[in-house]
Length: 526
Image (tube, rainbow, N blue to C red; front, side):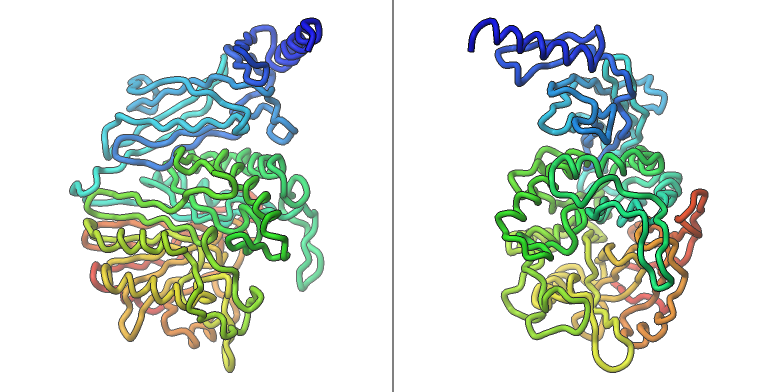
């Protein structure tokens, strides 16, 4: 390349950066134009439009997250192909006067200008507040909490559970209601986005109905597709309030990539090599938008998601991944009558490595309660009243051998002291898990934030389904979230439901409370 051409390209890059960031931009080029760094940027639009978040709390710190996106739905999200320094602060007070940690992190174009700061050196079991700044712009302030040291005496933990937030089906007022409770942490069980194309209408038995809101774009395949879908969700003020209220532990289910995917298989029969490319794009976008540690940074189409968090001597939170390592669904992935392959001995739901990891975590003890936080129902629920049987074969019901191994591990190590937390169903269920006559664990399936629309307190087939399934103790089909209050003497789950989500202004109320004592997994009937 001639010097004249090289200088022309350099001038063009500078002009592009100045046009996007204003005359105050300073470009530090180094050896390569592909890796510029912009100091003191000037934004023509607010860069923190996607909000802030914290997550993965530990005894000495947590992750704080943001992503620079002045034009969130545009290609390139309003940012140049350059790294931009983002300053951050952590304080012991909401006014940010007592700063105890601060620094600067680069928002890199390789990660869509997302920032993941792993803050350390903090005190255990206390709240902190945090904020970002870039150039002359400041983000909102968020609240995070460190965990108690593992094994440390702890009287109480209080946390929220939610997920399945299809943007088109309603408003995120349930998240706003949850934020007001100021939980110690939030467990999001997945389906943070849905991959479907945007459609103005949905078809119902009563004819076409206009959707509450519309997705931007077509079905998701590319990295930019997924980035814009996350951006559309992250711009919602109620969701931003929930992220700013408490640290989150997140997992993904299927719709972050494609409906009912399993390992390298999708529902359309795409060759695994091509589906792996879609997985890779989706997982990078997921990481870019979640407050995760660098240990979860994707490698190709894979990312490390199963992990454990400890809350003193009270609670062990085991977060599972029921998608990356599972066998393809049985019976052609039908919702209906199970076939013989449901009980095949070589089936996997967690994969051997994750199964062994969970067995070891349950065996090590050290906490009064064990929570298994995951995505799909463990209860073997017959959905067809009367003769015959129908099951959700994308749930644990379609994986008989792995399900037996899971329940046997609970029975060996933590019978009566385990609570399974689940999503996916867009309904509330409370039920018992057992290997015989006596329950060994309770399962609380938490309804959706919006998916399915307003819902109803009780469906017409509820009583008939309950009669077919004595392990099912309660059911509700409204939207909402759950609050779990855990002490050494009891585990209390409050099912909070919304009066409506298809218009703004909905409020939450208590639909049902369940209380367990250690050593007794029996639930009262609904």
